[in-house]
Length: 221
Ligand SMILES: Nc1ncnc2c1ncn2[C@@H]1O[C@H](COP(=O)(O)OP(=O)(O)OP(=O)(O)O)[C@@H](O)[C@H]1O
Ligand SMILES: [Mg+2]
Image 1 (spheres, rainbow, N blue to C red):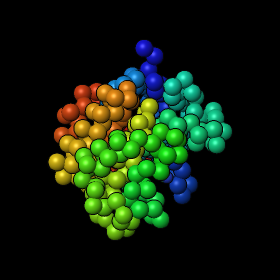
Image 2: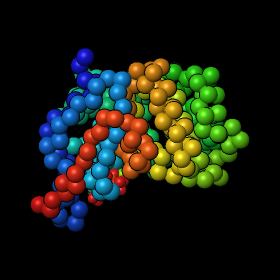
Image 3: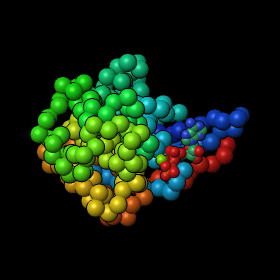
Image 4: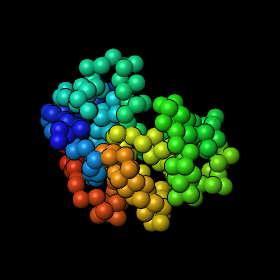
């Protein structure tokens, strides 16, 4: 089967205060449909940058990103946003919950927007992540680890074709880390999703056989 994500010759550099920093250069890889891959690399190696490029949020400096036959960086921004909303979910390293919405609405909003809301799946995820008593609270009223679980439930609930997860267990204990892996398994089995998960966690990396390793290729130019 054709890979659902194809990346070819992808390079990214940032310019700041007159200097150019190369984050990575000529990266090429594929992700098979209905697979999970751990994205590994030391802090600063470019994991978040790569996830943002795949999500269509940060432009590459050069190279090609093809997602489900769509060359997303050839699209105009509104089309890219529409494509992302329909096909992808991102679990951000900084959670990115909506401050003015309570936990319950934060979890359901994205799924409702794309007309893909599944009440019983939502109940299942609320139970799995122990969020039942937090539903009426606002993001600022709950802990970092609780916010992280809300962000994960929100993304998984959309049943995305592609899930990009950026250090999703960074603030979680071992039991909640296992719940995250369980939720990912649900997506793999029920929705044939493709999952890329940036992680420093040994227990997550051990559970996911396929690995994509970013070497710190940040050369000053
Ligand atoms: N907007 C930006 N402007 C300038 N440099 C940036 C920008 N975003 C990231 N960088 C640089 O690119 C490099 C890669 O950053 P990135 O956040 O992708 O690393 P990471 O692998 O996700 O690290 P961590 O494990 O700490 O989350 C870093 O050296 C960072 O300083
Ligand atoms: Mg990061």
